[in-house]
Image 1: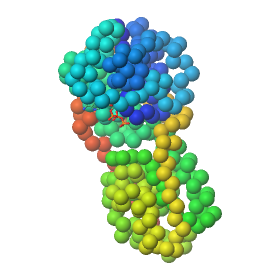
Image 2: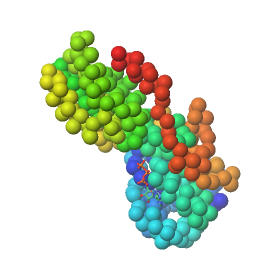
Image 3: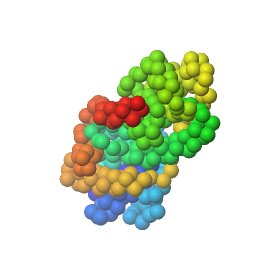
Image 4: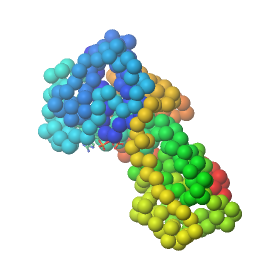
Length: 324
Ligand code: ATP
């Protein structure tokens, strides 16, 4: 391998720049070339790429988002699109690809590897932390800290006005963010897709808090929670049944996706970037780099894509105890 391509694909997350930097610098360290591919698979198809040196990634470790931009590509989902992508890599003399993204991006990489025998390594970059084979994904820690900080602020106003706040955090299919942020911010209730609490139990629990003298409360709701249709309808239902409460809804939304990555995300990105390049140089491919028990590991892309990341049961118990 003489030249490695690096791209960011799917939803962006804080720490992606730190990972790009790590890939580029590891290539420089091993004296091989590195090429940055813009806008994920779409940029690859269009040949939108630029050679990168150790110096072209200075001052980005602390920046959120991705300097290579990210995109979703319909064309890459077709055989013709992937053929164009392969031609583009051959034309530019790129021997292997590091894809920083989520499970959709890994599925694309895996299919590409199957079709062309082309070496691909994945680095998990998504705030949702919903990828099998790694305890942490890049951007997750930053998103948790951003959300906790926002909820702390909301708590100030909640307690000044004796209000009940429903706060929606990201997590379409997974409650990792909601559960951790809920525990970290001391929420009264945490609603996650993995556990359908049910509307009656939610009312019961809020009523119990009210009777024991709580005048303000925070309920953290994961985007993908199934208790209500959505957070607004959930709040409406509670308002109807508990008219004493003054209820407000806040959707944190994309603020969770941006911002300066935490030290933890930067360090993880650096470690994963080194591992990705060195794995390719060892002749291995079609793996995702992950971390468990603070040690880096490799999971076949197929398993990373098909496996389900489990919610932390012990933390659910902790949250149950904390919310009594
Ligand atoms: P996020 O976690 O933010 O959703 P993601 O990587 O899962 O990130 P997707 O939009 O699902 O984001 O996938 C990114 C890109 O990967 C798609 O736009 C598409 O180009 C490619 N891709 C996804 N699934 C496939 C597939 N089955 N075949 C080929 N390419 C795919």
